[in-house]
Length: 111
Image 1 (cartoon, one colour):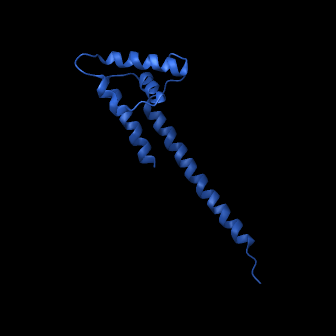
Image 2: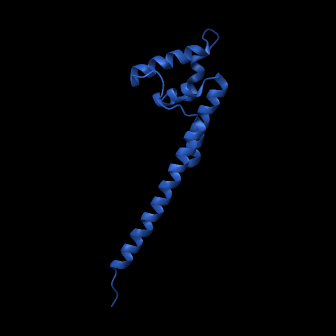
Image 3: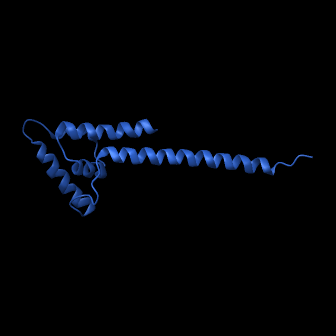
């Protein structure tokens, strides 16, 4: 599961490097739910990469009623946060299973 999360966020870092887009615009596109693999459709010989930014900025304002994200994070800390959250969920899950087993064993009475 953690590898899938990292892969999904790695695509965003590749898009950022390929199109020379700032962290803020990558975060905006990610929050809008855009597909990073389809960024190439926007860029052809007639359009500039800046048009991508302008289009997404307008959509971001329409949907979320703000011009920029409140806190701009690069993709790498987001990946670290998601991995940390995943590890916490896994440890919590294992702990809950251990507690349930101990409760089930206590309920058995042998004569």
